[in-house]
Length: 325
Image 1 (cartoon, rainbow, N blue to C red):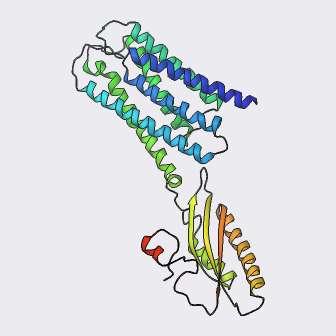
Image 2 (image 1 turned 60 degrees about the vertical axis):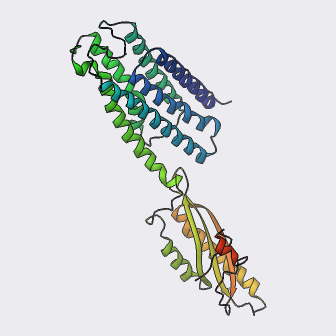
């Protein structure tokens, strides 16, 4: 085991330990901000599996990142409903960080303060261990999501401890819920914009036209290789984590099958065309290309694709063949 892997294991262990402590504290003390720290801790724990268990499977790692964001979205939504419930209650005699009706600074607040400090230290260690990849595409967004809730808990505690706020006002008695609503809205904006950036990979989108114009590609290949009659069934999809893509296509060649050397000629035409296709697409970002050659006689004028099995495939729409209009 190398040192980097050992460091990642240590970071993941600390992250899970902090999450377990926070969940234990949440059983005894209700705090909306504490629920937010638990939700963001789950991001570190889930994404840690990407580098520890799946270092060579980036596509699966992407799904893990998306799963972590979806899980956090669900937890934030449930927590937000609790906040709205708190805000609908106009009872003023509440402490800032609990549902207990204590007007004095007590152990509940100290426990939550210690949990918030532990959360910041634990997440800082996880970030420095590089065990958890960044699912937000931006370092500052990640820092805000991971540390904002715990930081606000410390700030509210300080305001209460140093008597810097009117403890008997409605705003103060609902300070935590109001803060949670604002933070949740900001985190939702960050998480949803991050999920949108995963969309091209999740839905197997084709590369953008400015990256690879397939109409121009077909014209270029046909102009360089006159024997190419057409290029059909072009399917391309983006590949995580960069702008690369995979593509499959069918190359149709017109050859004179009455010529005794038509097989050799066809092989040469295909070899030259393959080089042209690979050069163009590799330059555009393709990392995997599947080419299917089809050699048709110059006198053939078939309505049906030569690869059709039988016509009833079309009525069943099972994709065994495609009609050429």
